[in-house]
Length: 240
Image 1 (cartoon, rainbow, N blue to C red):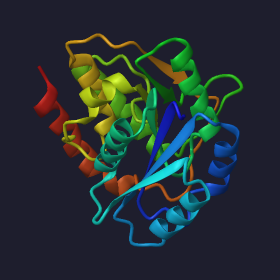
Image 2: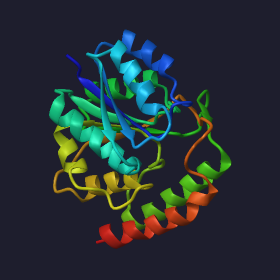
Image 3: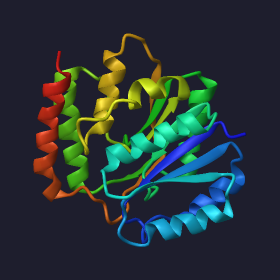
Image 4: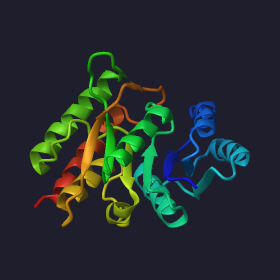
């Protein structure tokens, strides 16, 4: 029986998602279960995912949106599917390009499990012997977002935007039942919901050993006006 469900949101990832790496991961980690969320893809993503799932019918599942709803909704759909349809102890989500390798993501789960954490998330902190490769725009945009939101919400987090996060099943409903106000910055909304919850949750920012930015990211300079808009939406809806 799986104790760790991994949600992978996908939009037009047919040429990017490295399913060979996922295949190796599933063969060596019996506790893992995968839920793909096909977010209205217009390429061959759905066909590629269903072909892969047919090889691992007991280890994989898929949620499919007829139209694109955005990453926030895709992650929410997958997290709630895992909550209601599996008995996984921990449920997390991971970017489809595997900038964080599934094997390293599994280490986050093991750390959370051994320390009985409510949540854990990857952090792209450059340190000795770590391999962290980010493009300049994403790095500086990330620092800008983290600095601004920390000033507003006092989150105390270095890297809010890394797409590798894992939660104990008992808190998934609290964090994911309500729709997110933003599409790009929903990760920050999760941390704000944790901070503003009436319950105290234990968490850990886990420094990743390897994180390599894959080509084809959907966040670029053209995204910045929307990111700015969403920053002020966060302040509007969550500032106390």
